[in-house]
Image (cartoon, rainbow, N blue to C red; front, side, top):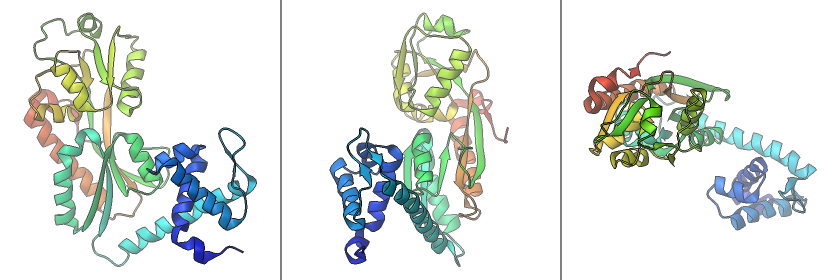
Length: 322
């Protein structure tokens, strides 16, 4: 019989580790997902096997596969973790006029701009006492939302394949052509520019990088040289140093312009390339906060865009849902 006294202090964490290992298919990947070492994750799984007196992973294969018992536990464990998360959320909010705890994922490119305003807004308007912020790419936000480590995200991916979410439009922005300040060559076609400068863009591991690469393939534009980076500040610093040109939206340019990087901004000589920022939250858990946050974020971002980019930035942004 299972000895609850031995297992209970670490049961939830062990189940969480086991689910991560089961869903990634590898002990190392599951450990990385939860910021654990591989030996620590293995100890959690072994503890479950000892407690339940059964083998959960067939370690004779590479990658290891779930046994029949492991598959059954995976389904039950996921339900238990989901139920606990739902209970936590309900008890945090029931009977309260205001929220007390907020966990937010923010697109890395706008995190510096929005963080002070978000914290002030949450504390002043909603009396939220405990705030945790995670900056990252949309892939990070998806993981945080799926594992219920975040209550909402301000992100460039609305996660339309995920059920149980509410979405509030922040803004839609067109990409601009970004050139070194000293560049004096042709700017009316990407082909002409790339004969003088390599393209500097987000890497394929990012949502923006994949979007740009797909759009350029549709246009049959294949640059001879490409420099890839996974942060907007890295892209803009390369362009500012004269090492290439780029395609960036106003919010992707904010941090570089605040740091007074030397850049030329022009309308992109190709059409159809834009991105949308959305506040995504689990449905009806945060009362009116997600919509209010979307409105506040739009106002703050537009103030920064028009202040640093003037008309070219303002006309590249649409406020209403498209």
